[in-house]
Image: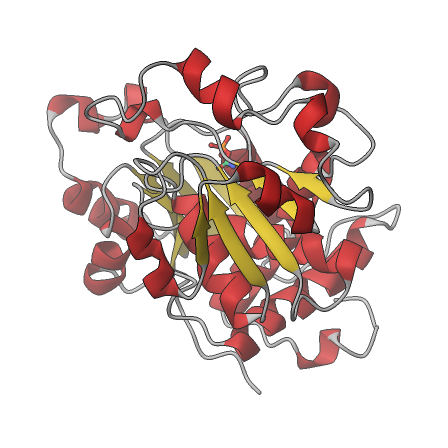
Length: 317
Ligand code: CP
């Protein structure tokens, strides 16, 4: 099946076949990243602009690394020294970047829907690198890619997502990807952060941490998104940690083979203790590494690359 999308805006709109296509393309690029020469010429001559208007370490670096591995030129927009500080709008900023002959924009913004908005006013591909509490599609793709590396097919696999679900774009993108891949997803946390209406998305909601963990093959921790909470959704961080933080005792309730994930950034000692974040069941840094191959796949496919020849096992030329 040919890839037809120019933009990557949400996982809600991607089909199962498209998610699997990104995963297969990422797997091919991951093989090239294991070579001594990691670069491929797939996007030579293209210029990608990382338009990040919210802080980021992993996503911005991984998109930069991915673009460089694909031989593209990459420019990171520095919002603090840009004319957005003089009141220039997102629309004008993006249209000027296009006028400067960028071939693709990767955007992170606090406003949900801003990548969709840009996709409607620009003529170049737009990739969503996180929009408010809405979606973070490449994070959902790299998380499910990492789970598949450990568990194989995700159909019927039990995945617990624990923490601040309400304000998490990572949770939403993972929910869309995991349910399409057939995983059984349970969301766990305080009822203020994990409201019952999430069941409309085809997942279970639980406030009983022990029974949810006992079943899990994957547990994904999420940090408390203070930057998106207008008012406190629980009395204090200490209280949250005492009820829902993953510590050694609670980890002992898990199946010994269960893997522990976190999209980062981690608040150590709040949602997860250091000995678990750094322990042998943690795949947190594998997620970060897989972020390069998955973003190479997203950039390649949305710029018109076709995946078929990558599937043969041949390395992308
Ligand atoms: N996971 C993630 O989006 O991390 P950054 O905010 O550091 O990009």
